[in-house]
Length: 347
Image (tube, rainbow, N blue to C red; front, side, top):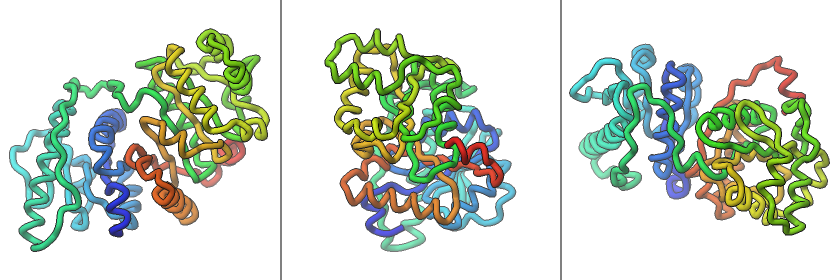
């Protein structure tokens, strides 16, 4: 990892486990509490994980024991934590066991404490090696139950952006699933801000008004946004949505400041505790909108052109003064199907 990258963006923390519901809940907690220290990457397939780690430097790894036993060499990973089903008291030579069935706060503290152990080992093994960052102070986390039932954190409230410079990889489907899952806990509104959103495909029961009508009402300086939104929303999987704008030129004509003002008013005057923003490239003020988001999800695929686009996007964020967006970004690797023509036509 270059010195420039170390200064501007955190290292990679890879998480891989076969128990999908469990690890996704734990992943959300870790990626929030350690967001300023790492960029987080979640895998359920160890082959995909190893493919990622061949080209990306991994600073820490949390992996299920059943996967760890099948991998011969992880010597290039400085910090390895292994989720175990049986309590183990002492760390081993190359990894630290983490008991799976304990509270999330205890797991977090084990990882923090284990990182210090690894740092001490490396400082002895490699004289003169400098630590990448100071160890943060422990953050108290609300105790979770044994089953890791999900809780909504501060970073999953407010504006939640879903954006990727890589196209046709299932970003909109991911955003919809995210909104539906979050709506099990809090009121959620989904907004699609893409030039060609394919709204009639995703929302076959179209509402009479769309996002353009809401923008018009805002420009009229009306004060009844809460009532207005309630009259134009549709419902899907527990969340509300507003039909996207049909005309791309109309979408492009809305200024970034107008979008941000609209989002602020929705959060202030409506019942919604989270607004999912499914963002496209043609939206004005994209980086400013992303900077307003409490969390950003960036779907991607591991293909040459896709990774080049992702690298260019991250570089642009840093060079234009928006590098802090990366600290709140969770990358989500997508599995692209070769013959998924339906997705290619609708994303």
